[in-house]
Length: 333
Image: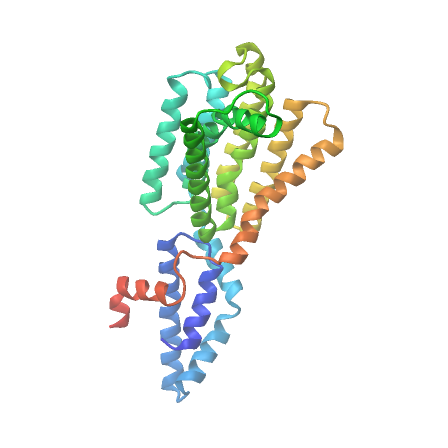
């Protein structure tokens, strides 16, 4: 393959933001068209390099080609949309039925979510998977929340000399949990960002909502020891927030244009957090709600900044093309 064509296809791929299988299919189709165009020009007596440049010019800008290919390939069907919305609906049902403290139902639902996440991760990473990944990280969030009293006790002893220092094994266990949770979240988010930053935002959007809720119920005794009547007063608000996220995820899958997908996740996710924050704390006022909205925007746009630094694709350059030719050896022949 001529270097000019490869560079052009590399740039197209960097803006595709499709799953790896679809990306390889798209690049294969584009390369086939390039072969045909170059062969046609070569028959007219044009040199190979000039034919390649003419073929590239006939295709247009790489970003435009990538956008058109994305719009043609990214729209999912209704079954994908339902799969994307299902984890949000499961959490909404837990809150609507007041079963989120149930020692049987809640673990069963989260185990099922983790199992579906692992299945999707090992079977092509379809677009519906990323809302499931976010909820599979919730047990890590709960684990961090549960270990907070130990950290608070250690901090109080070290800085104010009040109370006693927790046992060494307790501190070791807590730090190991924090390190493992941080490692899992960073590695998972990094992998997803390399696929598409907006998928990472869709994956992470439930976490600040659940984090705000956990922070608030701590004022009433916390997740494990609080009074049930006091803790359940926000169940309807949380259920509605997750229903909103379910509709957003389904809309994301069904839309073609990338800008509309970004708008759906960013704007609706920010509104959901502002809605939850207003009901949790109350009396926030316009500027308080605006502050929550802006914080959520920053949080959800952070993956876009990270992608601009680390680039797109788990494999790039020679590594990607070597894998591509290995899988499509018939093209070389």
